[in-house]
Image (tube, one colour):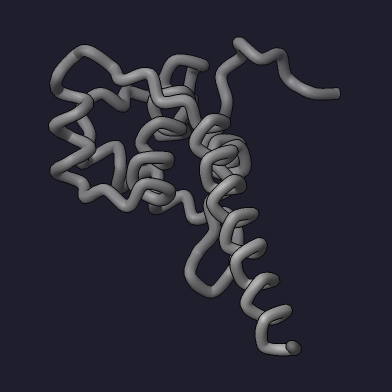
Length: 121
């Protein structure tokens, strides 16, 4: 049985949603989320029952945006803070970004194929 989309999620569930992994490939790096909580004042989980963190849908979307900017776009913490402090959240279409990457990759593959064919001749 899965939780409803608008239900609060635990920190472990948020790690899975964001697909966070440590450098050694282990999953569940909850320390990343806790670090982001200290760095970004906008992240405000509910802390209940002996310091257990619970995240609502809005906070999870914010964490997705932070993850995207840091990990996919390669921005710095200060750069992301500046964007979030503007109060005008940029509409970042992650799917569009992924399709751009896919198009670039297809173009590179096509160019490499042409080079290989030229070398074979």
